[in-house]
Image (cartoon, rainbow, N blue to C red):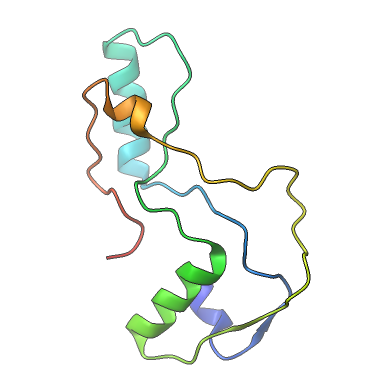
Amino acid sequence: MLLSAAGSLVQRNGQNVPCWIHLDDIVRGVSFAFERNLNDTYNLVNDTQFTGQELTDRLCEQAGLPLAKWLSVDTTDRVLNARVSNEKLKQTGFTFTHPSMVG
């Protein structure tokens, strides 16, 4: 889906930060928390968190496609648009199988 933006105008500014994580790590993270009776709030997100524009640009570059063009105005519809850390979860001993959304 992100690659479909290659060379075209995206009707957003690309500054949103998707908190993506591989399905395997979600399942493993939840199981890990249950097995250790973790009783707090933890963020299940990858180590590398790119903006939508950074992620799309990297994917287009890897695929040899032209970069997308992004609006320069703020079009975000999220109240909070921030990177979050998974460090607290990693400090409990959890390790991610897929720590990055792009290689």
